[in-house]
Length: 129
Image 1: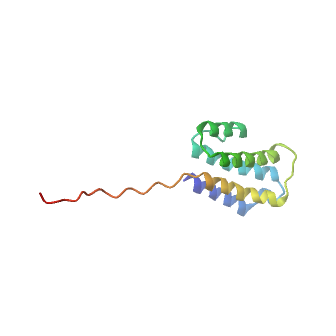
Image 2: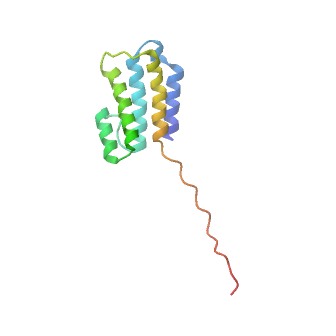
Image 3: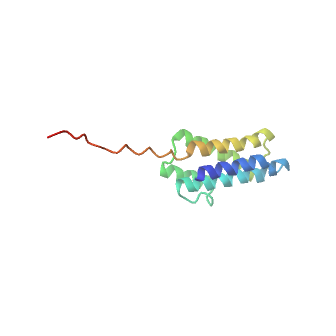
């Protein structure tokens, strides 16, 4: 449920490109961060929205929620978001557009696996006595 909603939010952001059309990179990066933190909080059951990147990463590490490689990619991605959000760094326009695809990849690679199919009902063979 959260996976689909998060992907829809990211796609809406991509289609709109509102802040990007105005050159407002900070607003764009804040929006991507907000969408992802909402997803991560729902997916891993903690308040990621109100957490700093460090606090969020620490929570995920404590929960052992992700494989090391996934955790490294997630931390690196949020570091890039934070660089634009909290400094005067201006990304290249293509890098700003790529954040949406990168965010979608985070959602798709961390989503819950689909439930396993139910086992077939057990019917013991009846043998004549």
